[in-house]
Image (cartoon, rainbow, N blue to C red; front, side):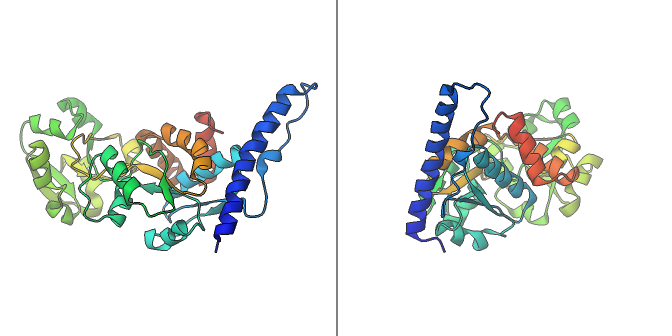
Length: 309
């Protein structure tokens, strides 16, 4: 258990890491020896000073957590990883009591955990609702545009043939369109009835279950309910349609931090969130799950490619 005294020491250590790193950088600039090797004093490996980064037992979430961890290490922080913890009932108590300092979350799903009656749907509204719903001691850092949520997805060929960009564009397609997904989708607010009410789109429904993407590729359905971080979006050339009016609850990737260290972490993690895009998250998942590359390797390459290492 991390006590309030330890949290205070941790915050001081984190601030020290930034300060020492800055002093070291200035000293390096002033050195009379331009070939002198830089020191590594910014590691701030003091007792109680490690930033604890957690993750769900979910490959995509672990990759994001590893990106956070390596970004912090690159900025001079000592980092402890507590990955593959499980679902929210397993890790939220540790996040709320300060045992974990930073965790990649999903805005809509987390908002519903704390406020099951929320009516927020769009990314900005969900984020605003989340910042109000979080318990004392937790802070939402800047959210990413990357998402892991339900979508209406079509093949790239179908999108190009019919000029599809948003869900609303489906209303202009000739003939009857069929939506495929799990059986419960038919009665969900974001099923056919929701599409009709919000976008004026008429959709038949087919319960496709685990073969939804296969049915979409085979042409037995026209529109598929697919999670936006699914690697098959890239590998099978699929297109999630934009949802400007909030048929689906937005669930953007958002770092949740302990308020005791949030300001220090935000300086490093907010640029990570800014760089992480929907397409980028899918590509990371392809590398991790399809290409069987480790989370550490994928994260290191992504940070380098985005100038964040």
